[in-house]
Image (cartoon, rainbow, N blue to C red; front, side, top):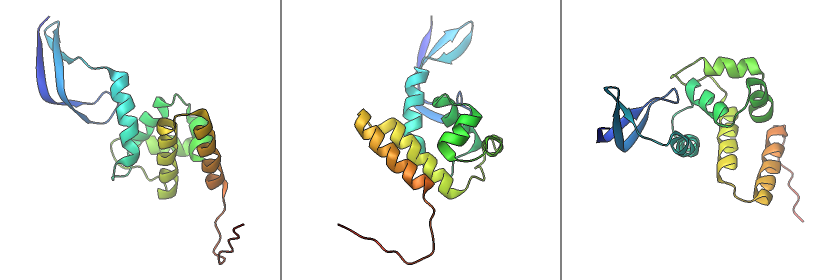
Length: 149
């Protein structure tokens, strides 16, 4: 089997372009294919998405949902607190930024960070409880009245 190295390779297997560096290519049946660990690439991509400055695209939202192995309905109810039709609509934006509300997108980014960065079960539970509290909180325009013990 013939192989060669490519300094920069544009991978589109997740529905959106990702630039990979120093990729070994293998020739199979006369065609060149990347020799990559797709799961490892997916793990790296999911950790980078919350940190990108650009709005999430429809394909990225679909990737996030697929990465966490969630149906439209489960993702809608458990993660973004929206209808499954809203999620399907966002995903249809393809490589363009979805029209997802900025606050929902920030909650989705927090969800990804929590699921990929929190190590222990106790840390995960604490983060998730805080996340649920924030998601369910109704903000008002009344002056704050914090009480600290």
